[in-house]
Length: 630
Ligand code: 6R9
Image (cartoon, rainbow, N blue to C red; front, side, top):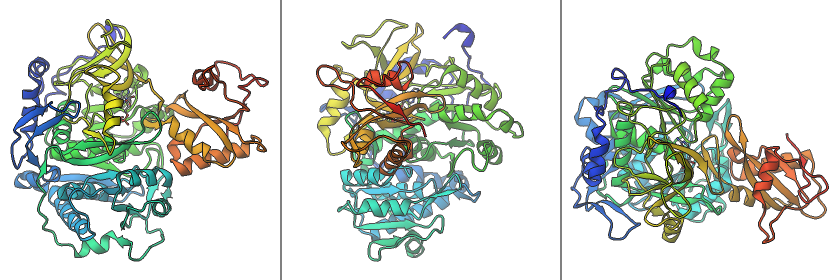
């Protein structure tokens, strides 16, 4: 990171949110609680909080204790009293090209009706609702309907397979599942209902299924269990009062991969979460009232929850939803969407940007991208080359690029520039947002000197932090608050420079990051081990030009089976069916034995070096492996 590569904030492009004075960092650091209380005060509360931060039962911190609010009310009702009533809340475009615009008034009406539908299906405050939908307007509608009646939603990414869906439903014992007859992805229909039926064979808690018609594909329909969404919506009354939720009540559960395999249900509470996402959405994206904001992440991930749904709607801005792939029908779809809807802020992932680089700048040339004012990046490290390409070719050299570091657990962006204040350095997520304290520490928890590397930790609580791991508070403490004293451990390795700028290197645990999506090696290993031919499997993440990391699997077969390209293909399909296409191994290496340490641990480092091609596979030794790239 050298001087030459620093980009200074430009006053013309960054003044919307009024964050133009770097004093904000100092003021927030001097009194964090007052700073966050000021942000929370921008929401509507039914009852004000008694205490900003209750630390009496740390690390189970309680933000805005005693306060009452409703997230759906803050995203909808309160805007209806202003001119935002007739403004677009959601602009949706389906992959086949169909469009729908919902104003705040229209979205409000859909949500209240849907809330009544959920109630008529027996959902009560506190019940969990699993949501397995493609990127269609019904997804935010159902989320907000759940929030309205105080039923925590658990959205399961529509790219996950039946096994993952089943595990997630069972862990939170969801009563209802909302799904669709499919979704469009690269011209094909994702078989959501078939997956759901398969999953539900193992989910005793589910009583009913609410089914959205999206593709018109014929699907199985179990009378008495399955109900068509549109039928029930047609007859539903529009008036539905909001539940008054405690600030600490669960808003949603979102599962993420954690070390040791089993997905963790990350729980986010109502008051702190909404405060954190609304504030960071305003500050980091330098939001203006008439902005059209497009977060390209699927709502099945935290990025979509926070910055396609809750943040933008709480701030009354227009959020774009796009259902399909970036290269469908051809690699200019993003640029066509930006031009058509006049997108001002684009928030996407480095893996997509690397694909655009590969496809070439010619795809952008015929589009007017002058509406863009700001660009964001999230999900994985963005290297300077990719940052500079994004800045130059998408942003025309005039749009600041905000690289934002955060996690499912953190709920909101924690390390990112304020574009009106913070000079940018390509390849760095810059500094913690005001009111957040991060550090790079060594093994013993001591801060490393500038330019050193170590573990990324958070030294103080922040409003949108997870409140616990669903059903497993001990794991919450063990996972995040035990590695270092008085600090939250992120699981990431990082460096910082002499200006206090952070560079996040990636995970230091057994999580791999494929195109910005977190996968647990243990989960993939367990899926492989369930296959009839597999004795043992070890999975590592190898570097990949486009996706950042890709899954490589080493497999030892049971007696009587031999490795072949056909079997490798079968195992890949097996993982796709169990977990989803993201987890599909790029390579399968068959090996008669795993290399082990004396204590019996698999030598993952050696496997990694082999997968990277750094060491030759020794065909006669214990790491003998035949590569079957399909
Ligand atoms: C929001 C989200 C979290 C993990 C995180 C880190 C990686 C996210 C990053 C980044 C470098 C960035 N990560 N943003 N690494 N630079 N700007 O992605 O949440 O899916 O939980 O993943 O992603 O490793 O720990 P999640």
